[in-house]
Amino acid sequence: MFDQGCGRSGGEGRLTTAALRSLVDRLGDLDADVPDAERIEQIGLLESLKGAASGAQARVTVAFDTSQREQQAARGVPARERGRGVAAQVALARRDSPARGSRHLGLARALVHEMPHTLEHLSAGRVSEWRATVLCRETAVLCAADRRTVDARISGHLPTMGDEAVARTARALAYELDAESVVRRVRGAESDRRVSVRPAPDAMALLTGLLPVAQGVAAFAALDRHAKELIAQGDGRSRGQIMADTLVERVTGQVTAGSVPVEIQLVMPAESLLGASDEPASLPGHGPVPAGFARDFLARCVEEGAPLWLRRLFSTPDGRHLVGLERRRRRVDGLLRQFVVLRDQTCRTPWCDAPVRHLDHAVAHRSGGATSSGNAQGLCEACNYAKEAPGWQSEVVSAGPSGISAGRSGTAPRSPAHTVRTTAPTGHTYLSTAPPVLASRIRGRPAGHQDTGSSASVLESHLAELIAA
Image (cartoon, rainbow, N blue to C red):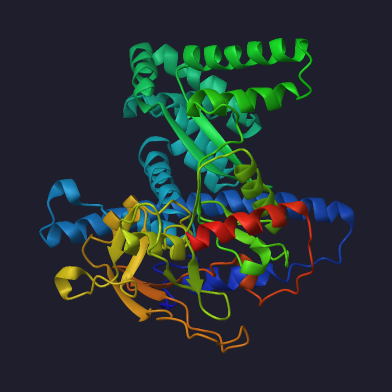
């Protein structure tokens, strides 16, 4: 990693970078041999310290943003493109996703330029970063002058207000100062309507619809009404279960919620698939799932007649890295992209968990970079655009495994993972390593046990037919 150096004081008593690093180190040795009353005081002081650190972060972030824009202007970067990559660097420094990096940068600008009272409270540790974020979020529609007015009027009460009180008060003041802008924001929000899906614990998923309030309430009421009708007719499912099943059936047009067309891209050992082991599988876009769940799910697909495809995925002998995938399937297209998406699972930028949208050349094609799995990395759209800003560089440290040898056992030496080193304009470097295709292989293969459930026997015969076809 890049050595930040010791910094410079610039004035007596000023906290230097070296002193700040020392403070972080010393917090791990906080005196714990104290009475409970003092422990409560320590908890309060540490909370204040977090707020004060957030205030300092905001000021440093704005100074960095200003400096980067000036440097880009000196290089001749067009005005509309200045600032590209700044949020990405902030995110990496904060070990956070690029999307949150953009929010951190926006919050810092608002606090430093438009909300001095809130920044003062934050820097003194009287409010949390989240509470300051709530206030900035609820006043984002206002002009700078009106935002300063809200900041001044609410400042005397801010340290004693909860999150909801801050949100309500800020909205009320915004309506009072500029009702037209608030109404315009509400109308504009309708253009942001969308549907998203993200993983949830226990092999579940959260399907979220951001809708205008009237449409959202109407959709929920229709599902609720249908659930109550079925319960009245003796349906044994709960109200929530019926609503969830009905949503899937009405959106997909399926007869039942369980008859989902599936292509098997579950990355799992053959033993787990056929019931000889309980080592977890990996579902691209979701993460690890229990082997039993995967078998039961696929068995239900077979029993309910849902369309089912099989594609075999090949890993290194130690089961850690993906090295290839079978071409045979009903439709073949974009195999290199499919391979990289399956290998990388999510955006390869450190701390970014966004879905892969772009297949990026680690070493740019214009610089002679090959279009190959070794030189490719999966990135989200924002990260791919950020690395196009001046000063960013990437290089492949390890191209990853190139193939597998027939007959080799699972005790083969561990293969090197695909690794890319990214260098930011400031010289800081970050390593990105492709994750194990099976999460359980991060510490070696666990011992499995026999499972002779009916799901395995149903799958075994059906998979044999698919492989032989």
